[in-house]
Each structure stands twice: as structure tokens, then as C-alpha cells.
Image 1 (cartoon, one colour):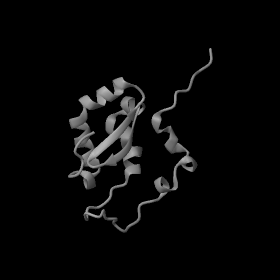
Image 2 (cartoon, one colour):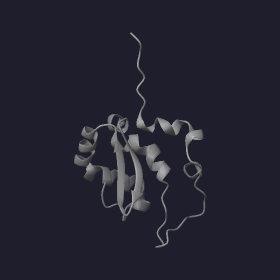
Image 3 (cartoon, helix red, strand yellow):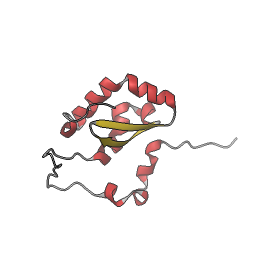
Length: 110
């Protein structure tokens, strides 16, 4: 019987050549500002830390895809994982705010 290798949603990060140039930019020592004066946070760091934030199992089946207007959008491999993350929303928001204090005031929902 052939062994099937399941890829995690985050496996695309391992091949940096496949990432858009905007994702590969390294953080500089200069602090970037939004038009409203708040500092930008490193979204790619959030993506890379996702498994640590949500746990290995959920991290294998979900991945943040964008953060706009206070909402963090997550893609999931199955609707059941979406439901699981929605039940854990309060805990996830707290963990994200602790790991990424720059978005503590702007993160409204997941």
C-alpha cells in the first residue's frame, strides 16, 4: 500500500520562491506606519506562527489569509475546522493579541 503524504495548508511557506515578492520582504528596523498613524505588523510572521497559536491539529487545517478592517480571515480545509475555530475565537484573539501587540486594538473578529 502506497503511503500518502498529506500537505498542510502552511506548506506553501516552505518554498519561498513560490511566494509573492511582497511576502518575502524582511522587516526593517524602521517602523512602518499606516495612514492613521498605527504601526503595521508583519502578517507573514502571523502566518508562520499560526500552528503555534491554534495548535498542531488545527494549524494543519487552517491558515490566515488576510487582515482587513479589524477582521482576520482564515481559510480552512473543511467546514468543521471553520466551526472549531469560531468556537475558539475568544481564546484565539487573546493569543494573537499577546503574540502580536501591534494589532491588539485593531483585531475585532476572526
